[in-house]
Amino acid sequence: MTWGGGEEMARVLAFTARGPFVLGQLTISIGGTEAAAEMVAATLDQQIPLVELFEPTPVADLGALPLDATGLVARTLPPDPENRKVYEGSYGPHGILAFSNAPAVDAQLFEDTGVTEAVIGRTTTYAARDADGAHRLVEQFAETMTERGFQPAAGVAGLPAARCLQKLPPANARGVAPRFYCAAAADEIAFEASAGQLGDVHQMAAAQYLMLTAE
Image (tube, rainbow, N blue to C red; front, side, top):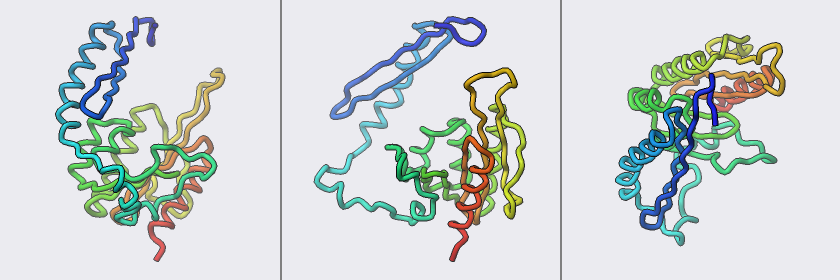
C-alpha cells in the first residue's frame, strides 16, 4: 500500500490472548512492516499490565450497574434512536481518550482540568472540575480542530462563546463531504457537536446548551 506522496505504508493487525481477554492492535506505519510490528510490541508492553489490573463486573451483576450514576447522560443530547452506536454512553477520563482527536494532548488536558466523566450521545459532554476548566477544554478542542485543517465558521445565535469551525472540501473534490464543528461550555460542562450541515450543528449546540442550563 502507499501513503500520501507515495511512501510505502505497512499495516499490522495483531491479536493477543491474555486471561479472559483478547487484545487487538492495529498499527499503520510508513516505516515498513518491522516498524509497525515494533509499535504493536510497545503497545502490548503498556496494555498487558493495565488489563491485568482490570476486574470486570461478574455477568450476573451487570444488570445492577447504574446507567447514569452522575446524571450527565440524562443531560447530554441523546443519540438518534434510529441510528444508535454501540460506543455511545458514559466514559471515564481515560476511556474517552479512545475517541480523542489528540490523545496525548487530551490526556494531560483532562488531568489539568479535572475531567471526571465524558458522555457520547449526539453530542459529547465533558464534566470538568470547574467552569474555568470547561472553558479551557473548549479552547483546546478548537485548537486541535484548527490543526486538523478546520477554519472559523459562523457562530451559534445566542451562544457567543461557542467556537464553531468548518472544513470544506476543495472545489474540484468529489465524494468529500464538508464537516462542521462547534464546542462550548455551560458552567463546568464542556461539549462538542459535529455534523455535515452548519445549521444542524448549530441546532445541536443550542439544544445541548439548553439541556445543561435548564432548571
